[in-house]
Image 1: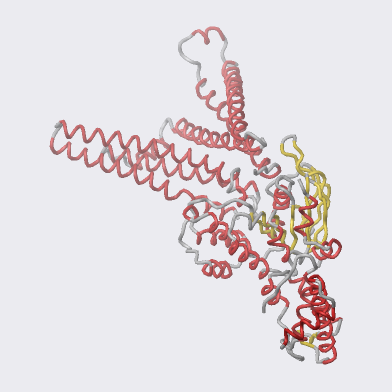
Image 2: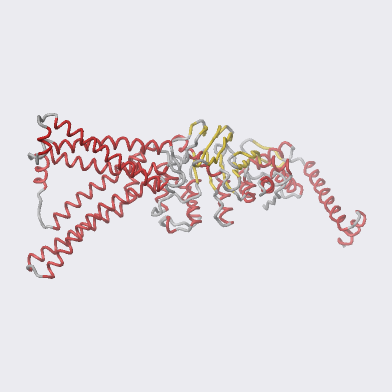
Length: 119
Length: 232
Length: 264
């Protein structure tokens, strides 16, 4: 999968976000096995320790669970996935509102513009 | 992750000119560490002291608990900036040489990497381009299962595709038992791969921190911070 | 590890040195043929010209063989331990003295081979058949045996001494941060004078020892014939000086290689 990182924030946080997004959008399904640390590190071109930290944090937050030798899996917790989805949704909408605001549109005007756009 | 390198009071002069002014440092294993600094800051000199090709004027260096010498040379794999093979040697002879002198050399790995790079084993070093020579040396150095890899400007003189290849090789080789020190001035290219960075300026350590900490505390990349710290 | 170092040291210049051996032998063979032709066809101008040219070539080839071995070996010491290749040699897990000793042993072996090739070439070129048992007897079983053996021993010591001096100068030169070549050159001059001084001292001591048996020193000094054993004593004294110098210079070299590595 394609990994994109910006250089201002710690990479482990960005990995966590991107994995959460994958879970929210259904790219990663509940119960699905996550690739190994090394594989992800190679694919993303980042330090394995960074990946390890990200995955451990995701485990701590309940998005992933690990089974000793079998590896790491996406949590079956639907609620988590839904939470992430609504979280991301809000993030995107916040960004939209902010950007439209820069163009001079108030939130209501932006909403109207969006309805027009959808039609 | 245990303590791999201990440096205390490291001083080195070239003639009268002090190049390293009392470095103190401790580095753990299982880390990829960037050694960053402007040209002439002492990065190369520091690495050479760790490798044993320069004798410090003062100070102590221990690697895996041993002083720099034969025992550390067995576990340290050093890639200098220059071609260090005799020009008349063939690539397959360089493999044989490493196999003869290093117990931890993995011949199959070297052969595999060289064939993927399309480098003929029968070519003589002197007939290879500079970039290819550097790749050969990198392959040999990374084909050892060392505890410490010292890479002095490994991506400086190569094209971007080769740079990616080199960084990928470093990542593939990663082990918790070993650490890699990469000295470079091309920070943005390597930043994502590094655990920790050490800024050296004028022979002294200006900053020593993890990449994550730098980004979290400063809200900017290491590259950006470097440009600030070392602005001319 | 020493064995492996020696193996690689031999391989390094094997092509070139065997080539020099071969070249000398070829010239000798040609001289041989030229000589044979001359014998058969008489001393015609062309014949003489051809055979003389071949002889000269053989001689030059033999000289070149020795020169190349020495020069290339000394240059290799510098390239291999002080220049870029030093980055490799000083990071393999071998003891520094082993790096040094290898470069004394291997050139000596090549030179020994060169001596053999020289003998064979001269024999072949001049179309004389030295019987090896004759040579053996002359060296080991004749009246002059001890002198001949002594002379050979002295020559070997001189060669080792030569290499030792070159090597220690290279190592002393490497200590300088800025001008390795100049330092090396200066060391050579200094060592040359030291050697001359020591040899002078040795000669004086030899004289004193030899003269201690003579009643009238002035008569001995004024006579045309050197006193008994003077020449031998000088050689022995010089030999002892050389051996001591060899030990000292090599110890210095090995110390520098171990404790004062200073690659650019």
